[in-house]
Length: 324
Ligand SMILES: NC(=O)c1ccc[n+]([C@@H]2O[C@H](COP(=O)([O-])OP(=O)(O)OC[C@H]3O[C@@H](n4cnc5c(N)ncnc54)[C@H](OP(=O)(O)O)[C@@H]3O)[C@@H](O)[C@H]2O)c1
Image 1 (spheres, rainbow, N blue to C red):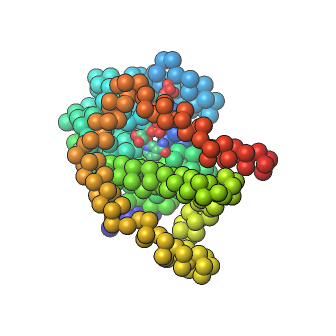
Image 2: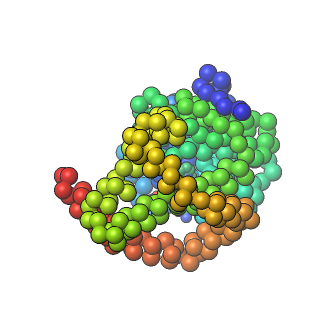
Image 3: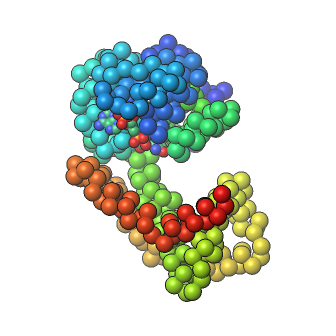
């Protein structure tokens, strides 16, 4: 496997380049600040009415309108929401310099055809495997966040060097850069979001909480059992792997996990996971995402409102107040 760290990566391909970071949200803020602290010439590109401009300027970053930031950049990193990448690319395409590099932190918009980059551009992926807040805090601690990298289009012969140097400059080379492709990264990431960590795990916690409460257990204890212990298992898995985590818990918990885990996550779950992967690969989720954006995010807004009002969330708030 191509797995690279700082000593394997030449920083030179980015050293004399001007980088435009488009968007100053979760990833944009962290990547712009990390690049800046690594000595890279960064401009944050924002819309005229952006509320983020003051924040970026207060962090000593140069801020410009998107079209101006793009026009003067050798490397343009698109860090606005994936579903608007198509419209954004159509807007900035006339300003993109001949032979510039266009970067992404998720393969989705290229893999599923929201964008077809111009033939003269280098197109690369540098996808940190976690949120921007952690990317930034790890960088400040002298550590880094693992990231996946790929080249989709190498028009100038420099795309690989720029992708790796970019990964090094945001601190990810301290942890490691893993080679992938836009398609592999996009499909695996969407699969995980739906079927594993972000989709299935919270639903498992909710189902467990509701089962205990329906069985007469107090919401507070049900919450502590089913939700409150998640951080403990995450830390154990991070440090020791899944086998090591299992050996670290009591025999009671280990036997319970052995008997119960596979009863819940059985072959029917694996079959549905395979269906999710097939649907992702067929572009069904990408189409849903575009539709949701075009309609003004009605499903997301409704789900956010409903989720805030559940017994589980009320219990979380009560426990938080009890701790304060
Ligand atoms: N979030 C994560 O943890 C994470 C992790 C890995 C990779 N990624 C990838 O990183 C990329 C950025 O995701 P994100 O979560 O960081 O995005 P985000 O926080 O939602 O991005 C917000 C930024 O995008 C700008 N923006 C929104 N709509 C825009 C539009 N129509 N035109 C121009 N700018 C617009 C916003 O501008 P204003 O300030 O003007 O509102 C804001 O600065 C995505 O490709 C995502 O898949 C994200």
